Structure formats: C-alpha cells, structure tokens
Image (cartoon, rainbow, N blue to C red; front, side, top):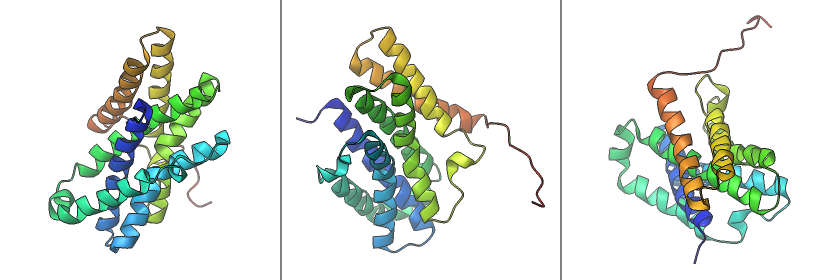
Length: 205
C-alpha cells in the first residue's frame, strides 16, 4: 500500500502535469511536446530535491509518475475545449500541485533525518521548481520571479508544517493543514493581488 506522502505525490503529479499540459496547449505544442512539459512540471521539483538529498529520484523507482502524466495528457486531449476555455483551470491545478508537493517535500526530507530548516527549503524546491522548468520550456518568465506570491506560499506551508509538528497534532493532520495553508495563501494572494515589492533598477543597464 502506498504511504500518505506517496498518495500526495501521485495526486500532485497529476495536478501539476495538467497545469503544464494546459499551458503547452495554449502555445500549440504537439502531443509529445505537451507530455514533456507536463512530465517536467510534475517531476522537476522532486528530482532536484532528491538529487540534493543524495537519493534516487522518486520517479525512477516507480513508473506510476510518468503514467500519471500520460493520463493527464489523455484527459486534456479528451476535455481540451472545456479545459482551455476554463480560465481558472491552470490556477486550480497548479495550486493543488504546489500544495501537495510542498508537503511531500517537507515530509520526505524529515524522514531522511534532515533538520526542519532544510525540510522547508526542500519543500519549496519540490513545489516551485517544476513550475520554473515548465515556464522555461514554454518561453515564459518563471512565475516565482514575478510579483505574484508563489514560492513564498511554499515557505509559509513549511513553517505551518513545523508549527503543527511542534504542537504534536499528528502526521496526517499536520500534512493536511500545511497543504491547505499553501493553497489558501495562493488563493488569497491572487484574489486580493497581494505581491512582494518590485526591485527597481536602471532599465538602461
């Protein structure tokens, strides 16, 4: 039976893959190109995390992750018109993937015996790095480098995870509250246009 963290990774993989394929379709990629973008979005952050932690990347020991991305492609192909015209699709699936992967990244790092501050960084990388790869592939400025709250939501989710663990609320409750906090921060930031200050410089440089 898969662990709770693995279940989160499965769902997060599917959600992130859809977000990547959804954007690839807007750029009129072919099916293979869209699959590559979706898969890279889904496994990119976790791969970087595992390499930094010195373990085998998670998708290399279980084929379910590439399969999840393939199923996401099939779903977008079958429901393409509906998903493309539903403007909130990208935000919803991207935020779900961001939340679940942040929690999975924090949890895996702690299981490997690293301190919480490392776990928060690894959770943020797991959640946000796949989106950076996706945006580079589709020739967009990565979302975490714009004003919109993105990676900061992962950091907040990691801090909430630490607080819940400190209060000994239990693993499942801790992971649920942490994931929800990431999603809520993203939702509130977009809804109320909350953003970080822009670093201004000389445009002529």
